[in-house]
Length: 102
Image (tube, rainbow, N blue to C red; front, side):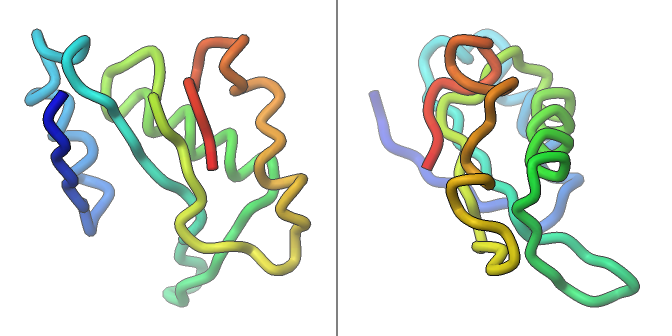
């Protein structure tokens, strides 16, 4: 499987990539990240479970896929223990939303 890394600086780009995946989704490993948000015009980092879940579900919708192969933390939220951030119980592989996480 070819290794292609694509970084999308804006959320709108994620909603466009799904077009490239149509018909070849089974041939690619799809990775996306979470953790950076903007509140009141300032960049901040979030890792609380509700934010992680909302980001994952939003990515699934924008990418028009049922499962993300690799879902990872872009920036660590130092206010939330990492064990909490990565405890995606409702998103875990046995629930079918993500295959792996780091």
